[in-house]
Length: 196
Image 1 (cartoon, rainbow, N blue to C red):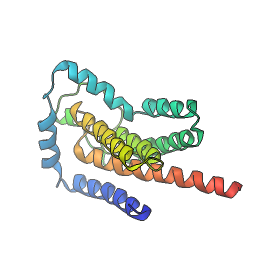
Image 2: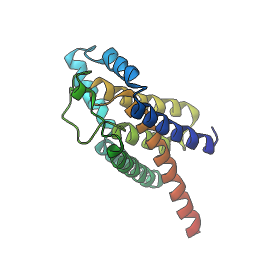
Image 3: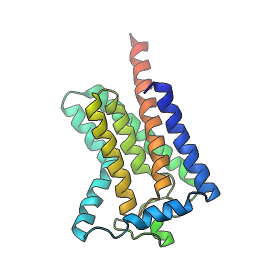
Image 4: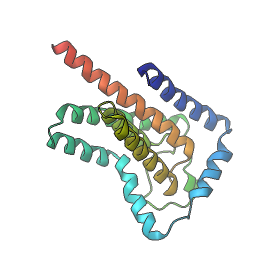
């Protein structure tokens, strides 16, 4: 996919999610998806999902950054660190735009993890996961890119399952993450080019 198209799709995802939530047009869809996943798994699986969801946390991104640096991929590690920081900061900065209640606060879903900070829209975990996948994916062959996309989808689905996000929160988070990842790689590339 050309670079410009990826940026446009990510931006469109954020805008569409924002407008859908703001207008209330996506409320039924979000509620239906929350009901579809809520309470559908045994408690053991809930604990596993609660662990998977943390892959999209800043702690998960820090672990990935450390692993990349330890295996000699320092440039990618720096980009992952920058991208995840941008994604998390962007998501947190956007939360006051809607101050959306989380699914467990509206009784559309049960919460199975600790109470998260801030409002629901957009998902910071989805943003961080998408940012990391975007950076790593720009250096991966096509097959691993599908695995990265599956990992992002897994983090997003886990946020629904644990009852702390609506589907449109995740959509906006993924868009934020893709833009953050692309900005981080672009900034790093320009810096390296400028030094040469």
